[in-house]
Image 1 (cartoon, one colour):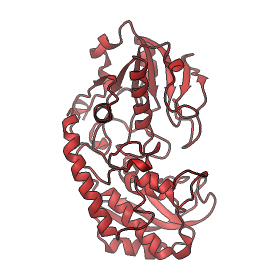
Image 2 (cartoon, helix red, strand yellow; image 1 turned 60 degrees about the vertical axis):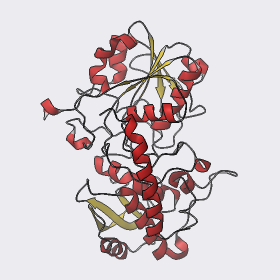
Image 3 (cartoon, one colour; image 1 turned 180 degrees about the vertical axis):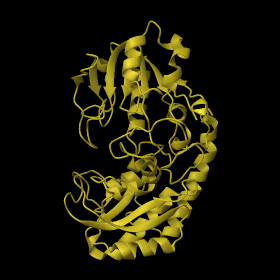
Image 4 (cartoon, helix red, strand yellow; image 1 turned 120 degrees about the vertical axis):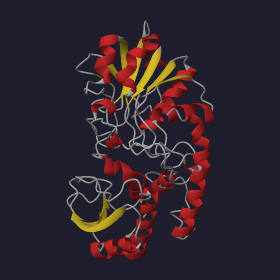
Length: 383
């Protein structure tokens, strides 16, 4: 497999030396920003070029923070370089944060999902580079769930947030470098952008076909199956149903204390959704929703990853759980006065919460939207 293995942008960075030579460099990264030998992009850029500043997205440069935890400014103990927070008071780099650099680089593994905050950290950084006359460089990485399939609805910008800032579908089928190009042009950021392309990646590849070692992009995406299902099951984060945070199977199991796991599994298996089978499970999260409380629900087992429609799985599972839960099911209320419902931000619409459509009609509407996006995205394909 080694000969056919994909090389990420960080693996061929020296071929693009002219972008970095003689420049002061800043880097946005996390634990997944490594080369094929698992050496950190922090160490690589610090050894070869003039690395002056680090910028931390959600979860921290070294992956030491859980979802939603604020990142504070600090000094990286390995390099002595200052780390600026992009997941705290400022999600967008300030002029002061950029004053000591000429080029801002991002090297981080995304999961191919509209909900994932890293892609908006990137977008804000691109805006800041335009405003402060800096160069922005993406060291490209595979979309772990492939670059072909598109799923879901186009986000209505009335519901934009840090889990969905742009009118794109949940599963957008672009690499992070292609997405940067898309955002830069379609939403008129117009920064000076370079993408260091991968070698050997093909659009139909899933991560387990790349020859690359899996490193958790974030603490609750521990494997490819979780990344594949995330576009569907993440919708439950706007409800009082657990998605398995605090267990070893986040986003692969869904449940709550009041559910009948056998009834739910039977209902879901009767639908014969492609690529998956449902199994009744009992689980007790160690943290997050229902910490130390027994939950009952289903595990979604993937039988064929290339047949899966994860958004459809999420919608159909949600409708079934609502149907069988009575008054037990709740949408999580807005976190503060004037804030929207989290489910509306995740879904990019209030159609789901207000149940304006039966599941079949909603999915047909969303499928039409994703087909339209599919045509637009092709012009940004690098591979």
